[in-house]
Length: 93
Image (cartoon, rainbow, N blue to C red; front, top):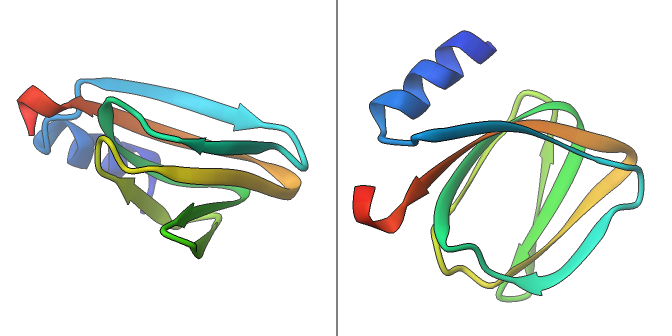
């Protein structure tokens, strides 16, 4: 999916904040949760999210979704990661 189509999809689904996130090679963040639903398209590199002990790997071109309040850890691969992310408040979903 290209960025224009992805951003159109985000808008249609009520994601009001759209941002680009870049994390360096080897980036890791311990368990945490967000107060918003997240939907992101990996545009460069790769990214892993672990929820309830189950890791899911996302490569360039893949989309991940994470509901608000979901406890998770996250990490970038050896090349780092860049992704275009939409955030949707719980009131909007």
